[in-house]
Amino acid sequence: MWAILAGAFLFICGVLVMTWEALGRRRLSEPPHSLENSQTLEPRHQGLGFLGLTRNWHAAALMAVGAVLLLFGAIRYALVL
Image (tube, rainbow, N blue to C red; front, side, top):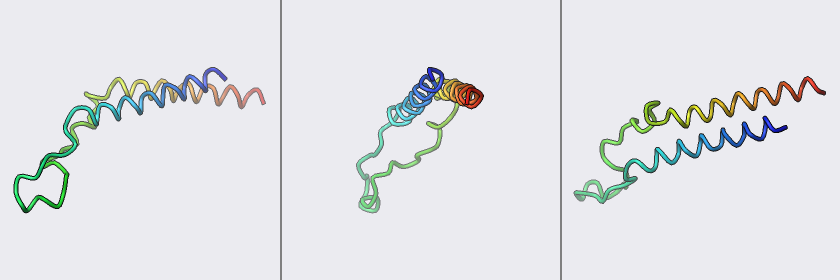
């Protein structure tokens, strides 16, 4: 049971760290610079660099360890029943 709880905790922590990294690195919106851009709050030139593994490797590691613990706990629980 401890493996399932620890795995779920680590996996959720990994997701939260990845979310924190994605939201905390840059501004989410900029004020419009012209009248044409007044319809949206999305920043210009928003790339997918914040999703890269180089910035999120520690979150991915937490999620991987959590997944392994979840699998270990599930297999151990299935063998006991």
